[in-house]
Image (tube, rainbow, N blue to C red; front, side):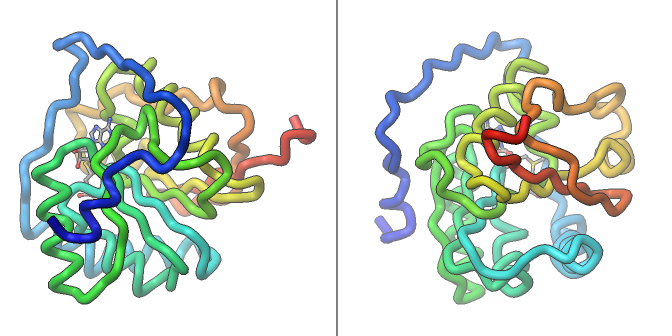
Length: 209
Ligand SMILES: C[S@@+](CC[C@H](N)C(=O)[O-])C[C@H]1O[C@@H](n2cnc3c(N)ncnc32)[C@H](O)[C@@H]1O
């Protein structure tokens, strides 16, 4: 087993949550479309980085990293001190590992659940999500858990970059119909900036509510 995959063990000391997701509400995977991956890597993510003007460096986490398409682009564009990819699907984590190795990128890959992120509180500077929180198992409750976990692992003033409903509806018009994220459940994540397809929330200090 490679060093990257050894990092699958939880690195915080909370007991894992027991998340029961009824079968009808389980995550349904999207098919792999190489042309779509290519478009994302060559055009979408570089455009997003340019449009949002994100800070460089720091500890960057991509939730739902899947096959790792975004990781080399995030690495080149954000120059993180450390880069982490998290996905619930072990086969995709393996693929992501092959991809980052092929690109000569160092990232820690974690097989884990965004609804129970195995990282310490306030330990991440920037979280990126290309749609996972919209489609996570457990419906709105699942999205609520995921956003709560993202808020927990972000440090104060840390940023959460996510797709807007516009991006979701363009990419998956049927599946995304009527889906929004339950922001009212995470008032600690305040609107920061937006660029049509992507938006950023900033974690407020605990005394600013
Ligand atoms: C919309 S895809 C995005 C994949 C990739 N980031 C991309 O842009 O191609 C959602 C990803 O989230 C992962 N996922 C689904 N539920 C998850 C969960 N509860 N925790 C972590 N990852 C999850 C899936 O395995 C899939 O790779």
